[in-house]
Amino acid sequence: MTNDIIKSIMSRTTTNLYDPSITLSDEQIYELVKIATTAPTSFNFQNWRFIAVRTAEAKARLRKIAWDQPKITDAAVTFIICGQLIDYRILPERLTPAVEAGFMPAEMVSVLENASRGLYFEQPQRQRDEAIRTGSIGATALIYAAHSLGLGSTPMIGFDADAVTKEFSLSDNEIPVLLLSVGKALPENWPQKPRRPVNEVLDFI
Ligand SMILES: Cc1cc2nc3c(=O)[nH]c(=O)nc-3n(C[C@H](O)[C@H](O)[C@H](O)COP(=O)(O)O)c2cc1C
Image 1 (cartoon, rainbow, N blue to C red):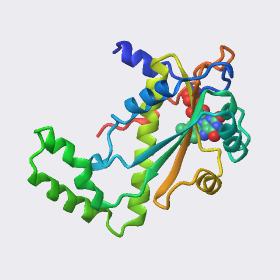
Image 2 (tube, protein in one colour):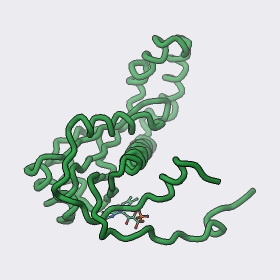
Image 3 (tube, rainbow, N blue to C red):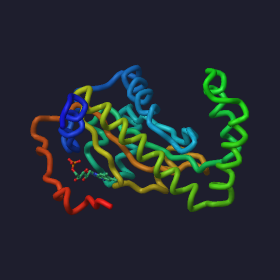
Image 4 (tube, helix red, strand yellow):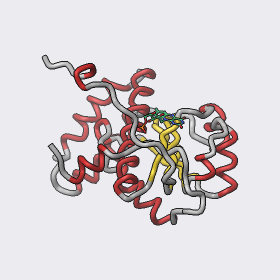
């Protein structure tokens, strides 16, 4: 079972060493995030924010609170991928474009708003879970988009979440889910690490 997209998915690795001389323009960063935002989110809440840390000064500030990982200063950009705690009241605003595009019936909006209220209202754990899911799925789309464009990437949990929240002025409803460096990978990076056998991780029922 293969095609070009599958080959691309299966050849991705995490980049450890970046070419620090290669930068990305703000337009290129914008395009990457545009691709990432086509990833799915619960009810199409789109409860994410991508902070592109790409100046030398900002990278240095981030590296200091991210285990001093050199990729943060060497990669072209490191995204602070934020998931937002869901406030069900924002859903009509997020769904109106689909109504205006003519395929979502207008009456469906309040039905979905009610359903999302039942799921998330006064449910802090569920709101947090959803923020983590949203940030993770968005990051995944960004990782594969970058790889297909010949760029390496590094998802990172090695950072001080409280310090990142403070230093980069995240809102009260935002969680820094992951850092994600993107840039030109050096040839010295490791090849893909072996995976557990599928039989160990797949159950048929
Ligand atoms: C949630 C998560 C957190 C990670 N944190 C770090 C990190 O802080 N620093 C790092 O160098 N790699 C980090 N990684 C990369 C993993 O080490 C890497 O994905 C794993 O070893 C498998 O290697 P591969 O991605 O090359 O297949 C992280 C990956 C994930 C998914």
